[in-house]
Amino acid sequence: MKLILLGAPGSGKGTIAQPLSIQLGIPSISTGEIFRQNIHEHTDLGKIVKEYIDRGELVPDEVTITTVEHRIAREDCVNGFILDGFPRTISQAKIFDEILGKRGEKIAAVINIQLEDEIIIKRLANRRVCEKCGQTYNLKYVMPKVESVCDVCGGKVLQRDDDNEETVRKRLETYRVKTQPLVEYYEKANLLIHIDNTLGAEESVKVILDAVSKDV
Ligand code: AMP
Image (cartoon, rainbow, N blue to C red; front, side, top):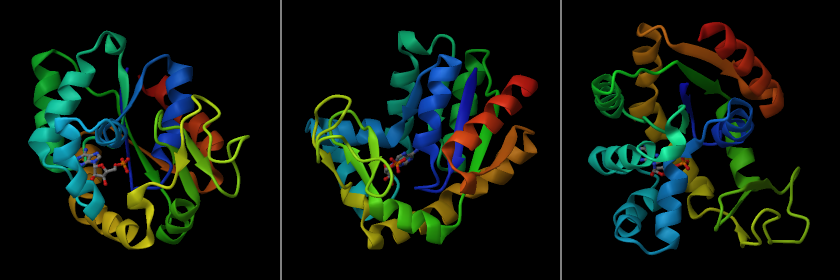
């Protein structure tokens, strides 16, 4: 099963993708996480994407699409995947449709995760992430057992550089202009499932699992 998670930065895509991935037995793939990993490891890709991410802008489509193509070609994607944060532009979506089309494959559903901007801004101010494995924490609700040390891998837990309020507002604007049009794009393709994430990830995951099991 191939699923896409659509939604503004901080709407809860990553938090929903994790349990969904476990329940469905398919990997969740976050382009943002792949980019951050590359920045952390000082790779050539990391050097290219850093300036865009720091400015709250989108990484160019060609770079992003190549990254996704490489990732979904890996063995763990044979039974499907959950894309968290890709596509983010109409052009990415069209090219991705072509890539899948050539392989005789298609997207099963697109989950549109919705949350108010003011809740997003508060959530992102409190978000902390492991720089090594990407595990997410929250200052208010879920902190690592040992301060600043990841429970999962022992990596350092930090605030993402792009989670400061100024960059968050820029990312929300980028989302509105470049990514929001995808809602209509996938609505027309009859693939969209709307989720109001105000009730939290656990409830949203239940609703999504119920919808995709009926849908697919
Ligand atoms: P995220 O972790 O999904 O919030 O992504 C962090 C940053 O990575 C974004 O603000 C973009 O700069 C970049 N990024 C992630 N996914 C994409 C994408 N599909 N297209 C372009 N840029 C992306």
